[in-house]
Structures are given as structure tokens and as C-alpha cells.
Image (cartoon, rainbow, N blue to C red; front, side, top):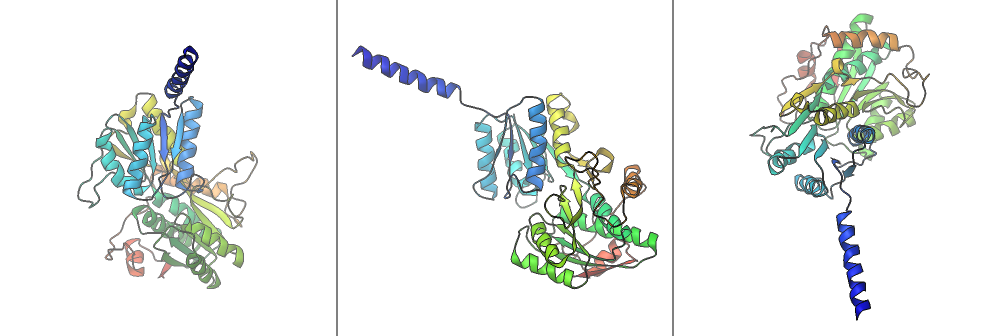
Length: 371
């Protein structure tokens, strides 16, 4: 009988110790409908979390929602909080509604919302509480650099394939057109840009066919600005021996067709906000929207080749180089170039007509063909 009691005691003690030793994670990231290795928002944001957490020896974990919906994102936030999260990073506009609810539900948890601002599902109420940092990016500047570089490199037949016409994608496209315009003026050239929204952020046969048709119609390079849409564009470029401009993160490592990428400093912005949280300067970002731009390292074209200290990040251009890039980038930093971020668009879809684009962005050397 004593042996049985001792055995039961040992078993109960083992269970109790296991419960006490349950692993918790202080910093959490919730992925959107993509994966952690999506070469885009999730991956770039997670790299920032890992960089900061490992350097400061803070436990961290990412959670992938079971479904891509407000309810699914909230469920993952609940799971992260139960798992010990004190800081939660959410990459992308899909988290705007979930964070609006979560900021009230978990007032002691700090949220870093990338590329969005909290609001209700009906868009009638926008509110960013003191436990939320809303981080936005000057996509129009990054897009500008991409368009400028392409035309300065001698390309005059450009393409733009955006995903959905959300503000970030619109800004990328508008900046792309303005960069192409300024470069065309400098070269006394005329440029044609085929402009298209896919209506999704997916890798599909339809998106590949659209890109291939553009390339077969003499388009030299396509700015693929729609998450996994880029994979479709890269596939089409590989088959037609044409070029691609990537988006969000440096995508040169995904395909030899990618000549450059209009990047956002996802990792660096996450690190900067996390540093503010842990260095008691949270007030810098608390309860407000902060734009990361050229001046604070928030956007740009890649200038290094990862893993190659002597690598040339501009080696896939014919002539455009880092010296030329540095000149135009400095103008964005100084504010002597200020690309337009938004224009008036009549359609509820956010799809601008060619006239709206050309007039709203003051295009003279660039002709837009909306497809």
C-alpha cells in the first residue's frame, strides 16, 4: 500500500513540476494568411523579432492562425497571451480589426501593428490605444526609387501588377509611376506603363498568364506588388527572359529575374519599436501612427548582398548603380523629392483610371495603360 501511495505522490509531483515548467514566450508574432517564410511581410517582421529577442535573450514564438479571418487572428492573439506574451507583433492590414478589439481586451499587452491602424469592421471608428504602436511605411518613396532606377537603366516599357488596391499597394504604384516620370524627364524619354490589379495576393495560373501576356507585349520589367503574386510574375519572367522588381523585402534570392526590390524596413522598424518598449521610451510610438521612410531607414532599394561583403546589389541592372541611387535617395531624405501618396479615385474598388493616374500624379513623359 505504501508503495502505491509513493508512486501516486511521485506521479502527481511530476505533473505539478511539468506544469510549473511550462514554457512561456514573452514576444509573439501572429502571421497573416501567409507563412513565416513567405519572403514578404511575415518573414521580414519575424526576422526583426528574432534579431531583437536573441540579442536580448528574450523568449519568442510565432503563431499561425487556423483560419485567415478576424476571428482566427483574435484566437491566435488569445493563444499568445495565454502563452505568456507581453508584446505581440502583427504584420499587415488584415490585423486592423482584430487589434481594435484586442487593445481593449488586453490593456496590459503591447501590440505592434505593422502597415495598419486599428478600426472597427465598418470603418466608422478608428482608435489607437496607448498599448498599440501603429507602424506605416512610405511606400510611395520605395516605389519611386524602383521606377526611377528602371527608367534610368534604359527601360521604357514597364509594368505594374498590384494585388488588391489597398493604400499600401496604391502608394507603391503611384510612387513607381512618379519615379519613372522623373527619370524619363532627365533622359528626355517617353515611357509606357501597363497598370493592373489582380484583386488578390495569390500565386495563380491566371496571374502568371497576365504577367506573361504583358511580357509578350514588349514589357521589359514588371513591378510585382502583391505578396505571392510576385511568384507568378517571376515564373512568367523566367519563361520569357524578362525582369521583375520585387516588393517589401529583398527578393533577389528568390529568382535571377529580380533586378531589385522596393523594400520596407520591416525588421529594422520592429527592432526599433521593441527597443522603445524595453528601454522605457514606449511613448515615442504609444497610441499613434509612425511612418518609417527614407529618412529613418524605413524604405529603399537593397544596397548589400546578404552573405557577400563585396557583393554588388545593383549588378542585375545594365547601367544603374549605387552612386546614382545614393543621389536620388539623398533627395528623398532631404525632402527635395516628395512623391504623392494618394490621389482622388472615383471607383469604390480603388482602381484608378489612366486619366486619374496621369492627372493626379502629374505625368507627362509617362503614358499609363490600365488593364
